[in-house]
Length: 169
Image 1 (cartoon, rainbow, N blue to C red):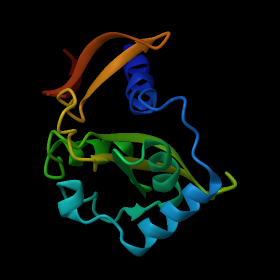
Image 2: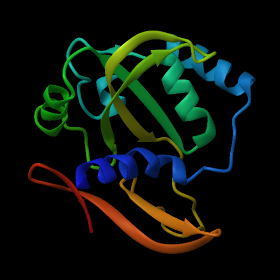
Image 3: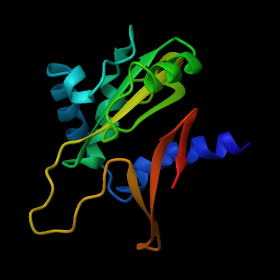
Image 4: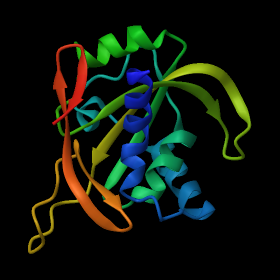
């Protein structure tokens, strides 16, 4: 049960930052075209993607659009078991700490949410693209999130690596 709650929080955290912004269909279409034309490299992700995984352009665009211009989200998918993929992204395929990566089960869908490929493992990278503001407050690392309640910050939490997974600090 504890792992299920943590998995839900991990999945929802990146969405909490821009939860009130909804991208237009045109924004998503432009991002799909841009991502398809110039897919992320290992340098962009700071790690080699999971071997044999494929870029899910629709997922990448729909996850990236509401986070523009600060963050690009790159979704890859494979039919391999999530445990095998998790072992890879925690081992030889581990990106830099500035690039959070999440592994979750799901499906590949098109822009109308029609299921194209059921039961896949997604590997999702969150890559910060916007430079830090010169006069603003110091930006949070990509692995830190401000939790909000009624629009007011509740506190700063950090999702940090530990043996066998991640924990809150």
